[in-house]
Length: 451
Image 1 (spheres, rainbow, N blue to C red):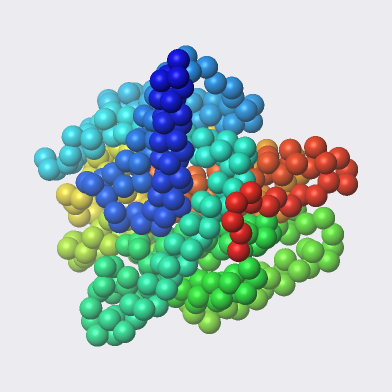
Image 2 (cartoon, rainbow, N blue to C red):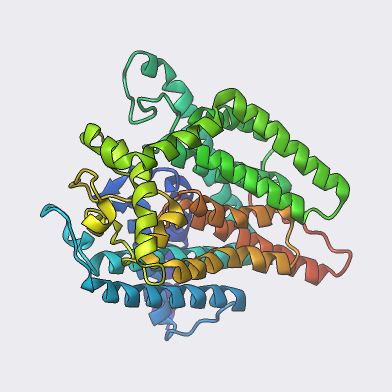
């Protein structure tokens, strides 16, 4: 009996140490999508490792566990989406596929859909698992959010320190591109700008919980603001504007609404000093309109014949051809060379992704299923609104649907982590408020440590 207790104690201690390591890696690796083994990100590998650990723990408990109802409902919606996406991909096997022989086995029809569903399963499972841990123990939320925030700041500092190398024509670990846009540990400034929005929102949440000192936050925000503008991310600028406008609608008083409108105006002025947003959008429009003949002139330029410019030309054709069922989740790169979509444009042997977020996925999933996915992404925000969570947490929950709307891929890890922060803290605050009664405080203090 004593040996069994000692063995159980050692197992619990090992599980606790692994959980701390897992939380650290989750916060630290969210900003490093360039770290991959083939197409699989390091953090995704860690996710699947954690799922195996959880499976072992569940088996030891006889697979008995309790679902928190809001989290269970979110999981059920994603399950419905995944099953429908798989069914539509099976139906899409009747289409003609055009792809080079060097396409990996996991990128073939049906298999690519299964891999996307596996990534989604890992992301949703870990999001809800983390939300549960943060709801039960706010010290874990404080620890993970601090790691997430300061690694984000470190990526911004890295971009700034790389500037002298950029002037010398040296591309240091991808900190800059040919357009001299700051991009941290990302391969482009656009996605990096969207990621930085999450860092701002996590920093604000840390401050509201008094888990970071005001001077430290100000210093970090100055650095982040410089790099955010330096990313020249049209998608991120648009996402910020939309989030601010939504805040205006959610504001309870006229004074707050006016403050939000003033924030939008100030933000637009700052953006205008860095980039002509209208000119950039018009350039995309002209590129997509003339894509067929320009693709032959730029046949060796992957940034033109693939990605967003190509997607803006091809995705509407896919939606027009299959508005209800799409071409199959993940099949964009496998059917984009079909004559009915490509027209007279140049053939490409790249396994392409449109880089248009939910808009790009509409060609793969069809409009009804994209709408279902939108409901899934907005559910955390709607649940937090229902329990009257603080605005800084509802903003954190709004991050995911809007970054995906403005181009972030669904398999990026940081939006799911940000949502887990929002859900975990939101329901933890609601529990504290309920237990304290009408006069209860909404402030959570970490049980260990503190800035």
